[in-house]
Length: 108
Image 1 (cartoon, one colour):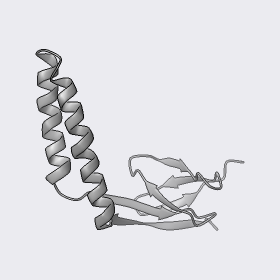
Image 2 (cartoon, rainbow, N blue to C red; image 1 turned 60 degrees about the vertical axis):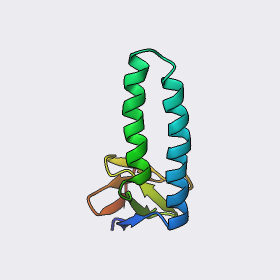
Image 3 (cartoon, one colour; image 1 turned 45 degrees about the horizontal axis):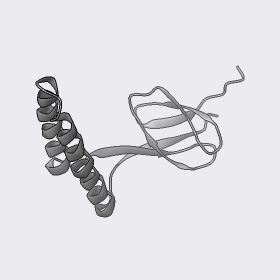
């Protein structure tokens, strides 16, 4: 029998969301100012970065995918683009499916 757990979609709590957006605003503004010192190419990059900073600061909230490790039940943040991940706590290898994390046996 395979060990597996379900994936769930969550949003950051308001305090984490506030910190995330303020980080983008502060460090993005610093990046824009530093890029503005580079003629022409830096100016174009600064305009692009300013657009990204505005979107990340005032745009919609991100939806994150989380799941529990089937071996040790540690909560993990999952990148759905990856096929296989490893648990940082127990070192178990897991396959990322559409809606499930499935434990992979590497001894085969």
